[in-house]
Image (cartoon, rainbow, N blue to C red):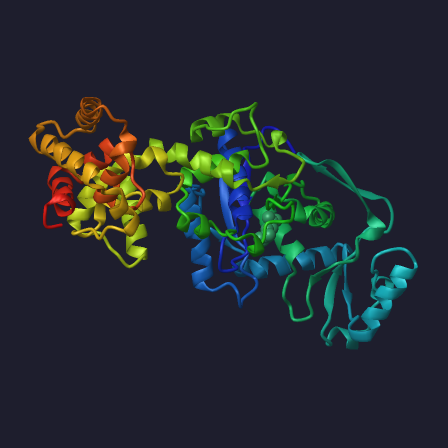
Amino acid sequence: MSDSKPVVTRIAPSPTGSMHIGTARTALFNYLYAKHCGGQFLLRIEDTDRERSTEASVQVIFDGLAWLGLPFDGEVVFQFARAERHREVVLALLDAGKAYRCWLSGDALTDARDKAKAAGHALRSPWRDREPRPEDLAKPHAIRFRGPLNGDTVVRDLVQGDVTFRNRDLDDLVLLRSDGVPTYNLAVVVDDHDMGVTHIIRGDDHLNNAARQTLIYQAMGWDAPDFAHIPLIHGDDGAKLSKRHGATAVTDFATLGYLPEAMRNYLARLGWSHGDAELFSDADAIAWFDIANANKGAARLDWDKLNHVNAHYIRLADDSRLTDLVADVFAARGEPLDDARRAQALRTIPLVKERAKTILELADQLVFVFQARPIVLSEKALGLLTDETRARLVRLSDQLAATNDWSAEGLDSLLKAFAEAESVGFGKFGPALRAILTGGSASPDLHRTLASLGRDEAMARLNDALSPFA
Ligand code: GLU
């Protein structure tokens, strides 16, 4: 591959109805590498499985890339629509003697495969060296690749190094099925060539295909792109990440409350590294990303790390954006936020977002604000409200009613001064105060809890619990 060619990468997902997180990482690596090199990142939808390739499952891919923030360049290429071009290339291979017509099917095919195996090589059809009769041509038949019998095919892989395949192990694969449908490896080569793809970065489950594809490139006299096969993502038990492990689809991670920028940062680190950098911006990732630094070993999805990265981006995120995301969570729970609650959420988020690892946790930390009055106290909370504590909280309540600084800082000072004046630690009244203010749901430090509720709501909750008629 000449170095002067502008870099073109692509992601070539098959629409399956969901976008696997491994596909997301492959897309990210291709995106980062293209942008690092000032090149282009293209999208091809491999929609040849007509049953699975519904409009909805294609849309899942568009939505997944959009959510991840990985815009592709140029027009989308749909593989199925290019079948005519694929057939044209198969006929060119046939004309050049690099492919042959084959009438092998059923038992004869099984026999030929068994014989080949016994002889220590992959399938070669007897039609490889047989001249078809005119009457054969009218009968349905496939077109197979005429693979080299001897020698090796070396895949020069930017991640795996040189990977050598014995040609005798690579069968004469079908290029065009007897029903006229082009096969996968052929279509991929033709499309990548026509799209000008210079680098193919994908999961290492495609390494075998790379050998077959290399042979097709050679047979067509085309330059093969550079390959980079990256290890698949594994779960924490070391097995390939699958539904069994829980979340696998991009939408699962969105639903669990991960931010796209956190996913980009985390996925970039999953199988690639730049020194010991863990948290970095998109601009850093683009500046640093070289596919040659991708790891050869399998990458494990580590939820603790992902949570750590997500927490970082939640802290950085704009509060009104977080309010929108949290509103989506409540809406999905069937409790949409009205304008008043949105305003409460917006006021509270800066006070609690330090502690949230996901948007779901952030939503949970707002529940205390939304409690309906009067809050029914649990047995445990009532147990905390001894006469002594109740009297103390009445004194505190008076001070709160009188303060004209309801900021978190002002309330912090007030509470500290109060504890000191009462000569007690927070433990003596904090738990009861918290129970009264929150009904026991998760909440931040007391001064932040009070500040989030706002004066009117906080005082009302205190009065509900402390009034002599409570
Ligand atoms: N369509 C293939 C897949 O979804 C990708 C093929 C490729 O990247 O060459 O696994």
